[in-house]
Image (cartoon, rainbow, N blue to C red; front, side, top):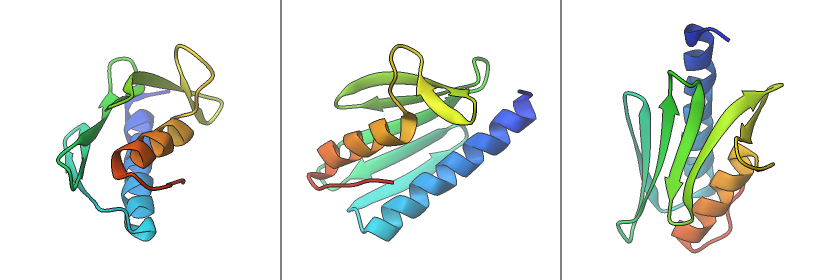
Length: 103
């Protein structure tokens, strides 16, 4: 995958995250600054989603820990286990927001 393809894919991921949070009515604000998407909740806690261009990975930092994901056959997979990016991010959002959330 080229850097340009990676950036296009991750732009779509950031858009999907923002749209899903807004549609679900989660009490959180999103801020995209360069390669970092911050999701800030009413209690001040944050989830950080970072696209790490050199490794072509997406990273999540949340209360539950830090996780790295690589695109494998069109799915963002955890580099350490079988976790999937959107399922893991939904679990983190649910934890931070105190309400069920899914993509």
